[in-house]
Image (tube, rainbow, N blue to C red; front, top):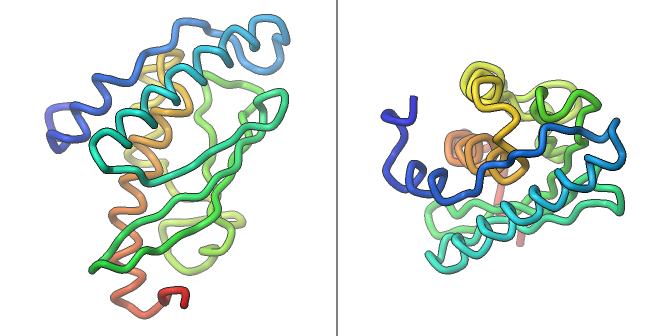
Length: 166
């Protein structure tokens, strides 16, 4: 599948550190070790984006790293569209990928379900399963949220479903 990715995506994924700790939030002690790896990978990805002038999100976990919130944006025809996003780390993480939500877009595209969760079933979830436990939050953003925004935001703008915020 990596062969079908565009070169920027392929290069980005290669640079995001893979995670080695296999624990999720149910194992409190080992979860802290995993969370450190998650944050390291995320910091690496954010730095990489800023250095390449491709900054497109901010993110912050809660104190125990089980709920994450942030802002993401996509520029279409020189207009910036910005959205709040969030997700919870599933109890079965890292075997199960997080389900990323953009609540304000709920019901505005067929590629979304249950309260604003973006649809990642066909393309991303099999990739996550194949690469678990080595993928983490940074990979979910790079290979899940980013391509979803790139595909859906132009479609929603062109169909008049979303408008620029003034």
